[in-house]
Image (cartoon, one colour):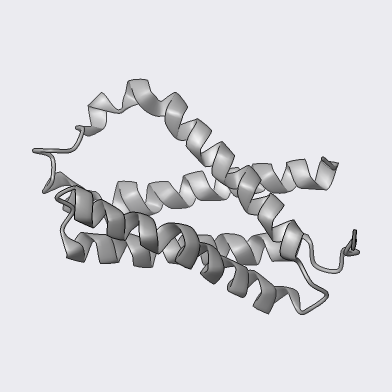
Length: 140
């Protein structure tokens, strides 16, 4: 693990945590308040926050590691956008569609979650590609 990897993972952790707060704590807040009869109340989640930190840390580390495995000598911006879209298709859309099937999350809310979190991971992909722009690519 290089210093750049650690820094990148920390930057991605900050981005995913902050952008997730914007998405789920602000943009989807009213939608979630309509579902409080079966969701945890916000004040009940405070004691569970270490699990939230762990989830974001694991996502951040994997996000950087996977990017580095497939990184190519191509323009960084397009590469970051493609990577963010790939992660959205792999990890964001399926999760929220499954939530819709197994929990009473309304389909409209699931679509909002998919849209907002897809934007989140595309922005993260762009930032990560920018961090690694111009860096030598190891093949082996």
